[in-house]
Image (cartoon, rainbow, N blue to C red; front, side, top):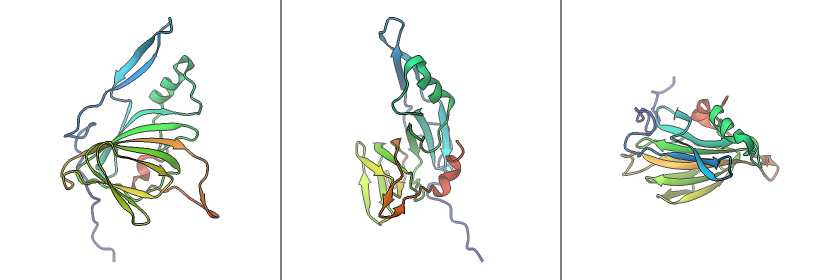
Length: 197
C-alpha cells in the first residue's frame, strides 16, 4: 500500500499572477529601428507568456525566444515569433530567455535539459544540487553554466521563507554523450509545464 502523499516543497506558495508576491515587477524593453535607421524602442511590457510551474511553486515569464541561429531580425520576424509562440523548455536551434519567480521554499524536481543553460540569480539565495550529490549556494549575481547536467534548484532565501528570482537563458546543443551513453533529458513533475508547447 502506498504511503501518504507528500506535497512538494513550496507547493501552493504562488497565489498571485506574475510577479510572485514580494518581488518587483520587471519591464522588458525591445528595441529596433525606425524608417531612417535610428534605434528606437519597439515595445515596453512585462512579457507575453507567463505560466505557473509545478504545484503553484513558481511562475515562469518568457522574456524572449528565438527559433533559429543566426536570428532573422529583418521584418521583425523574431518579434512576431516571440509574441505568438510560447516555447517549451528549450527550442531546437533557438534560444529561450526565461525569468522564474520561485515561491518561498520552492524546489524544482531533479531534471536535465539537453541544452546549454546560463542561470543567473537575480534576487534571493538558491541551493543548486547535482545528481552526483555535489551542491553550491548561489546569491544575487552568481551564475552557473549548466551543460546538459541533471540538477535541482531550491529557493533557500531567508531559510525558505521569502521568494527568489532567477534568469535562465537556454541554448540548443548537439546530442551529448558520456562515453557511449547518450545523455537524455527528463523533467520530472514539471514535464506537464513544458512538453507540448
